[in-house]
Image (tube, rainbow, N blue to C red):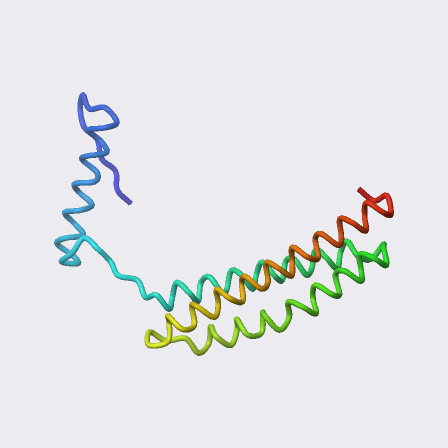
Length: 136
């Protein structure tokens, strides 16, 4: 925790003071003002978040599909089309290393694009069905 005070200072002088202290400590402790983070860690975090989002989407689709057969069909189709993508994302996450980060990143980008297309198509179908059935 850091607590700092300055007499007769405004918020700008406090920002400069705190920034200067943090930079000074970082330079003394780390020897640099930049911290490198592994690209593979970034990609793993992105994949983890995507898998969480897809899981939430599945649960939401299941919850809303119990009442209507058309919604259930759409939820099942969404789950069937996205499950292989999620499996592949999980495989890539486990195999990624610094040497393969560019190649894996490209494949992940392609999988995300495919998933976006699938979800958009399912949303369009769901809206059309709900409009035709008078749900929306």
